[in-house]
Amino acid sequence: MHAEIGAAAGKIWKYLNGKGELSLNKLKTGVKVNDRLFHMAIGWLAREDKVKFSTGKKGELSISLK
Picture 1 (cartoon, rainbow, N blue to C red):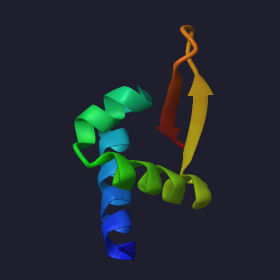
Picture 2: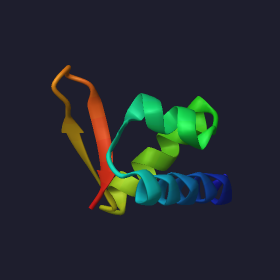
Picture 3: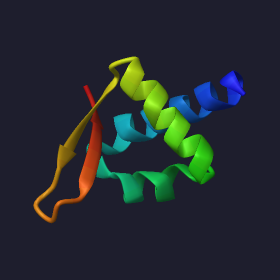
Picture 4: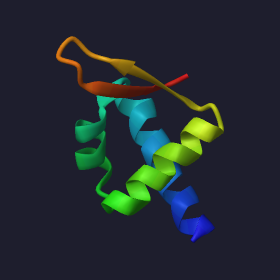
């Protein structure tokens, strides 16, 4: 399971590196991993202090690389 989470985290990191700040919904649509794996990978990146979160004008949560 760790390998799957790590692979999903890498996919998310690469996608954010290419696209910049995105809403969580747009990111999830772009990386195409299942919900459970997506959320675990976001947690992994947050724990590793690789991402930052912000709230947009409409109150939507966004994520970007640090």
